Image 1: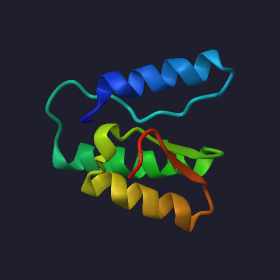
Image 2: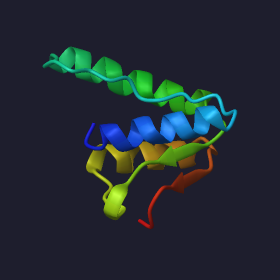
Image 3: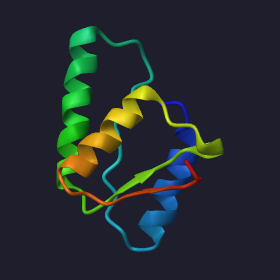
Image 4: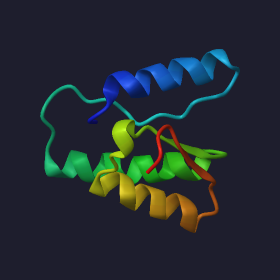
Length: 86
């Protein structure tokens, strides 16, 4: 995850505001391609569980994986918002 400190801050702020936050998992070591695929699938399941999706995108940056997740969220009817203009 490119913006881990910003994602942690958003998680904290939303949690303190009373929201239940479903966030991407953090991995601090190299992982295999199989593990990467499993985490990607798990992330899509988390999107399905969420009421809405907040994209943490300092400077408006949105990577390729995040673009796919945004498209998936919209395809399953989840509202998507951004911390910065995209």
